[in-house]
Length: 539
Image (cartoon, rainbow, N blue to C red):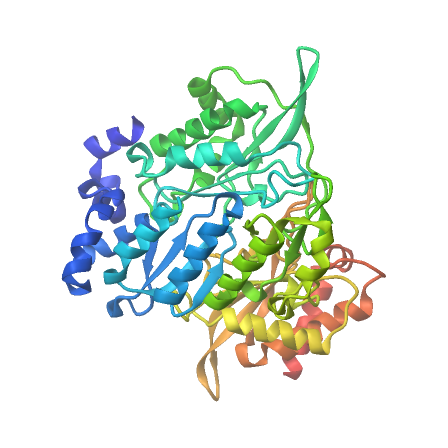
């Protein structure tokens, strides 16, 4: 393999993380957790701290305090009732009642200690859940259609495909040492529930005539990713039938493992290999692994819904509905999760689904039970029809727990959104994403308005938390683009009123039902910059 040749002959080209992985594979940390749990956090060598990522764990800020953040993989965001009860119990017993839904449909805990991990893993395994591979240089959880199997807008049910691919990569030592993280989405939802253009590899719904029959399958996009240097994934000229999805996923991951860059960690994602090779060369290499694949068929993606499924909607199964709710910035507590599990059991089939907008759905609700479900007290906060700003706000973890973040985000985004809902009235939703560092876990780049945390020097207060503003992101078919930065920094304490003023400029100048992306395109970046300049001058 290409990467083995580099290791053997040119170790001086490897970055320090690669050299550490040569000494100890990330998955090996799983063999050490019981020992460390018995001996305490002080017994863990510092050089092993980073390896806990392979177990789905990051040390919180400050690392020396020994508290872990854990992500639990939820492929396609589908949670059984038994799993929901276990997830709620872990949050209650170990996570100080904080349970977050992430932008990759995972569940995230905080405040875990090394002594608690063996019991947490035992509980997760008892209901077929895992945190392994939720972080680290390894295939991550697979993002998919949260409505898989019940969706009138899907070409096919992708649950078995996602489960098969996910289980193949779980704890697989052949793929536990990739150059960096590797993110995959598989969805047959025509409204792009898998956010195709920001994943390393994405399988999207398509059809093609083969031997005189229309076959349902997938197109493949490769090389997407966010962080400090974002790239939109590009489409390969191949059509993949459902039974070949796993083969193609394995082949693409193998190419990345063997040919991905390992010299500089900040240039190690698949997106950089695709940018250098181009899609034609990558396709040629892919076919060496898979054999011949048909050329592209007809893409079936339509209007992008941003991952939002609010309201009551009919399923493909007659007489049943799914109900979509807003979880403000994705954060719930254990009591709410226990209540949610009860509600899903009483009114549906017990399932709960998470979406990449940090929200949730309850599927399989008989139509005659919908009204009673909506009367549950839980849905006074977790709303069916949220207001336009809190309902379309996304946030990363922020400085509260994250070692990389420069500013506080999660609660700030909630407070800012609530302020905007009180002071600004617009006839369409505005998607606002807030992130605390350039890694962009909150997916700032695809938002109507992206807010990126920075530090800013002021005359009277010294260094303060502040935000830069980006405008005009979308993953709409054929016009997908990342948002663009406006000049200037907004003091975090002034963020809510400054945003309100900026949005009032939009409100006063927009056309009826004109969404922010279309408005930004029509008036142009210069006009938006002038509006922000005026706000900053008077702040």
